[in-house]
Amino acid sequence: MKLNVLIFGQLTDIFGVANLTLENIFDTNELVAKLIESYPALANITYLISVDKKVTTENIALTNNSTVALLPPFSGG
Amino acid sequence: MTISNNDNRYDRQTKLKAFGEAGQQKLLQAKVLVIGAGGLGCPALQYLVAAGVGTIGIVDDDRVSISNLHRQVLYGTADVGKPKVDCAALALQKLNSEVNIISFPVLLNTANALSILSGFDVVVDGTDNFATRYLINDACVLLKKPLVYGAISQFEGQLAIFNVPDINSQEASNYRDLFPQPPKDGEVANCAEAGVLGVLPGIIGTMMASEAIKLITHLGHPLCNKLFTYNLLNNQTYELEITPRPNTHLLIPANAAAFEQTDYEWLCASPMQAMEINIEKFNAFIEDGNATIVDVRELYELPMINEFEHLRIPMAGLFKDLDAFAEENIVVFCQSGIRSLKAAQQLSQFFGNAKTIYSLKNGIANWKKQQPTTTT
Image (cartoon, rainbow over all chains, first blue to last red; front, side):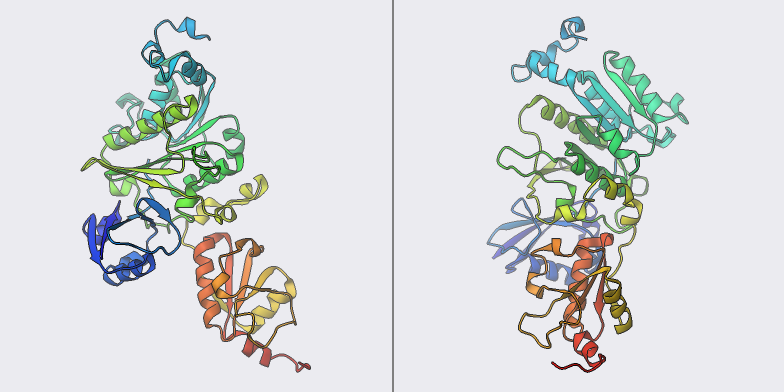
């Protein structure tokens, strides 16, 4: 099972890339836990999660080829 | 001022069938408030004024500085040191003298926001900090005002319209449906710290004007319940659907009086952490009656507590009815203090600085031991 992760804004400073491909992750809670394991700085950062272009606040099941986006808030004007 | 007096000023847009004279009339009757006459505000103002919006308000308490000029295109070198609202009004009036321009050379705060915003139909947020953005969002929710939101960071921009339902839904989302609480102080760098290419706010600010015009003239599909993002480096755009959250209203002051009491600078400072309290402090909350006290154990767990008033909300249902957490102080307890600390941390994360969350250390079993013996 393949999962696409898109990373926006200054979150790319933490990841070093703007997208990742991960295998065998079945819900968003699991994804966040795995990401924090690899990128501990993520634990202290504000961001929203969308699954297949829908902003989500609850744990959501992921399917093959789901695209998850992580977006931080922007304040600049 | 009628359109016939305008000669050919708006000819190229009234020629558009979907816009027409009717669209022009709607713009003429509209009152749009642009908050922040900076990188986003300048291009938004230019296009709104050029398009013939009848009344434009500008809020900004800042003065032009030399480092503004690469992106704040209403100002010139000779304006450095002058108030932005004065320079902007002058330039905009030169562009289109038929527009009524109202300047507010003030810092938007909870004391003046509701009275300023209530005089306008649409609010455009071009500010540059989270405290003001959350303040504007909450004020617009309270006043049910359409809010055109735009923000930038380095090479990326975000754009949305809040408080307007989309065609498929009765519900309207707002900024807190995306980001319920402001990020911690210093977590997100602003333009001054992180830098910005001048043309980026030009693009996003122009899109903000475009969304405001679409909204006013019922043209096309404005970004209601959607968040649009743009990346200047690779020209990629990404559009997300926003679903209003059932609990968002709990984070927004309930009325004007509560709004005026809210300290947005403080809300954006580092949030409070959930705190563990001892039996003495716990008993003080019981006595004072100034806290919502919650038992997060399962309903079958013993001992039953009937010594003081409290709610019973097992962990799994913690977020089902957040209205239940009515007081500013929330005190949670469980058997041994472990689950309640977890609950307190989750609640603290949700409520941010809006409420203070306490957990009874060592749990209610320990508390019970310290009580004078009763027949149970």
